[in-house]
Length: 164
Ligand code: SME
Image 1 (cartoon, helix red, strand yellow):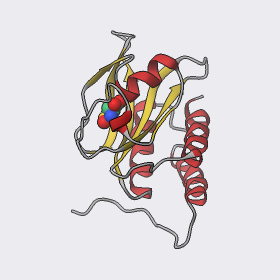
Image 2: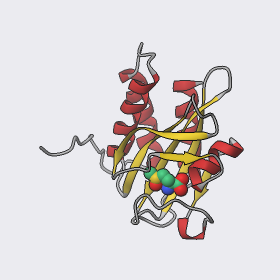
Image 3: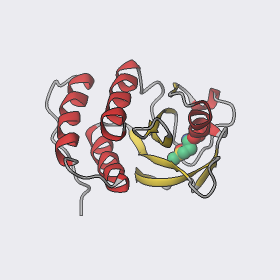
């Protein structure tokens, strides 16, 4: 069976797509409090709304091992199971608590190549209402410099509105 496809409006800018998606995601998640259900839904909707994205998903802070990320809901190719804080792009985001925008992963020391086709990435820390880091949202592309300030702004807005 073909993968689900979301409606792509012709001539819609990336910012407009994010704005439309934001409304759609908030509507689909309305009343749903379970974080795994929220993350699974966001991964699916974000992944299928844009081209050239090979992995979209969440790494969760492991409650049993607080300095380690464990893979959560995602769409795309097979992801690494665990990432220690400080390793790779996701580990850097988790350790620093800061969003990571990497235009070419080959220039990023310690990048973890779960998928050899990955070229650029964005990783956004996800915090709960108390401000505690609970996960990171990782999106990988097979195109160089796929992500920019629009992705930064819109993804931060999305994770804050859903999980913050
Ligand atoms: N590329 C990531 C690892 C996760 S995956 O590629 C799904 C990183 O360096 O953090």
